[in-house]
Amino acid sequence: MSATVWIYSLGSVIIVSIVSLVGIITLGLKDKLLRKVLLFLVSFAAGSLFGGAFFHLIPEAAENTPMMMVSAYVMLGIVLFFLLEKVIHWRHCHVPTTKSHPHPLGIMNLVGDAFHNLIDGMLIGGAYLANIPLGISTTIAILFHEVPQEIGDFGVLLHAGYTKSKALMYNFLSALSAIIGVIIALTIGLRFGWFAEFLVPFTAGGFLYIAGSDLIPEMHKECSAPISFIQVTSLILGMAIMIGLTFFG
Image 1 (cartoon, one colour):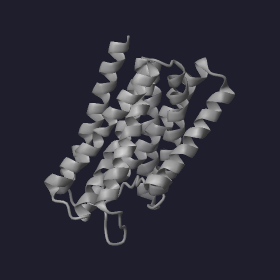
Image 2 (cartoon, rainbow, N blue to C red; image 1 turned 90 degrees about the vertical axis):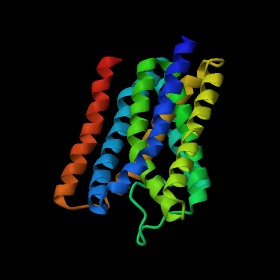
Image 3 (cartoon, helix red, strand yellow; image 1 turned 45 degrees about the vertical axis):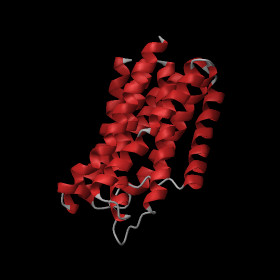
């Protein structure tokens, strides 16, 4: 069982890390088209994170842990993700940098992104410790969130003065910290069974925080009827995919 968990976990974070190279695709897109794509991706990511939390993580946690403790761990996840964002200045920004929408300096973005990916790796590892289907659904939710974020990170590095090749390389290197996160989670979790029981609802809290505090406000920046329709449709589609995955558990 432990070998299977390691294979699935490491394979998942490698796939998530490769997503950091998605920024290169945006270079051939016009700003208007890129913004439309990001509007869909951000809404879709929010739906998948909400769906992952409510239809996979929280129900899984409630099977082996009293609901009051599950609620406490979820709340702890929300609070700690908020504190982490405050301390290391995470920037879950999903729109390209412009004069009217400035981003932090490149080095700060890389440091924050490395910590972010480290946590992502721990979350994926903890989900796989619970069971394989939960790990897969958690990976998919994180993957959907990573696409718009990595596009934004790539834009930050270009804005900070990095060449395209260096921006891609540094973005990919920071993404590899997810592997360290998986190793930490599995090393602790396979030795201490309670770790997964804590990390699963904690992950749900993190998902709810990211979707609610970072993605939903981003969606509210566009208020026209056609765009709002696309956002709502994408949000529901992201949730629907997470619901669909419950039938493969």
